[in-house]
Length: 309
Image (tube, one colour):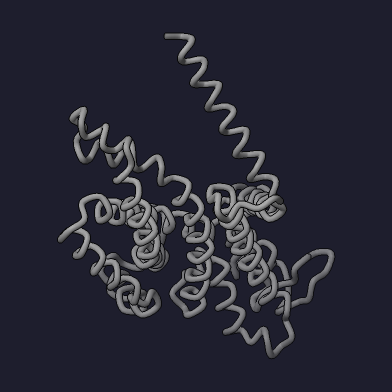
């Protein structure tokens, strides 16, 4: 028994080593991981790096002061240090994007796997439901329900640590970005359920739920992981756009909220490029990092796309 466990552990270790070798062999994966690790560290310890979040009360600079030795990225319209705002905004933007992606992957995987495995009427109805969310506009949905939720809950309340407007953005992104994940998972499930090992599982009496969770889902992980990275990139752009439209919260500023505040302050016409450029560059860099990681994962897992790095 112990020998079989040792052999199994050895095979697992070799498989992981092979995967990491192929994945890290792509230059895009290396660049994406380095950039992502940097922003994760920044988001994890903002107080240590730049101190507490500055407000109009404790601002230390002047009106839209350009970058200097005291304020590396300049100041905003009330004298707050832009570097301080950008670093603190990283936590909000990344947290919303990652949590929204989790919601998207859970919903998309569940619906796609159920539709593909059962087929028939279940497949038809679930795919029509999925088609509806393909055309569901995140912006319109958020604009409609955010004022309602804020009015019902109260402006000063928090939901899971988020103020109402940010929580609505999180949920809206998660519930409107799962449709293409469901389509991909469904197509893979249709192929997997015809495999011999699924027939063997049915013969030994495994339930449908057990087959989906123990046999089909593990084989879907590569596709889910690769597409999950792309979902995060899309979620960051959607969050930024919604916050730029004014749905963010100045008390919990994300990168999109900073862009919105900069636009309202007339940063573009005033030539305050640092106020717009700093959060904008962060959004582009993080999104590009996830795209590079997602493409590298797809190339690693998909033999037909695999190329020599």
